[in-house]
Image (cartoon, rainbow, N blue to C red):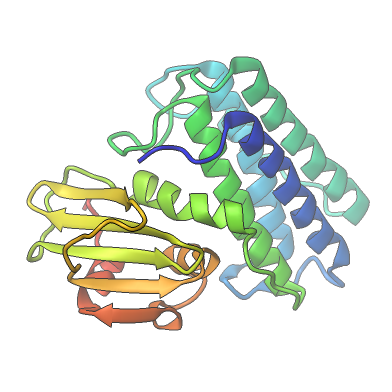
Length: 259
């Protein structure tokens, strides 16, 4: 599958979602409010996770190819975030600036360590930027939900997010432990992706609009935002329309290829 958004656009979207995240945090009456979609975290914890992650990935990109995450990045990620609101917002903005500046400086094709070895997403600054857009988008949704004002993921982020999730988090050469199946993810915005699960592992392709294709074993249909939020466990599978066999989607949710 090909990347849908150009590298400069990804950097802009990281900044845009980060600003939306800060707006949600700024509107919260209490930073200790529990995040409904991450019940072990407060809103402060969520902010620390996102801002610390930006610092970690900035160091990972700057370090280039490595056997593991940057020790300096891990140390930066572990540093406590400020608890006073204005200082926290400034800390968040500084983390975003650090990440985007590092990505821009090193360029889309710069190789670096990532945790998604063996996936269809490249282990490059471009792959990091693409994934960080989704990380920021989903956690912005978490923050908005916490203050009672959840918004759908922006369409172009969500459309790329379906493909990015399949490429980064699903694609694998580990054999599928169940009978072979195909599953379609149908975005009502006009895009469809087919996931094939079998002895060769998991692979996904974007289906060309208007072409004839064999019927899948099962499908999920909804907005691209709802599909992405389903992937990340923010909404239940039953929240999107299912056709055909649905058991493989639940099996996929519980499958850990590394186990």
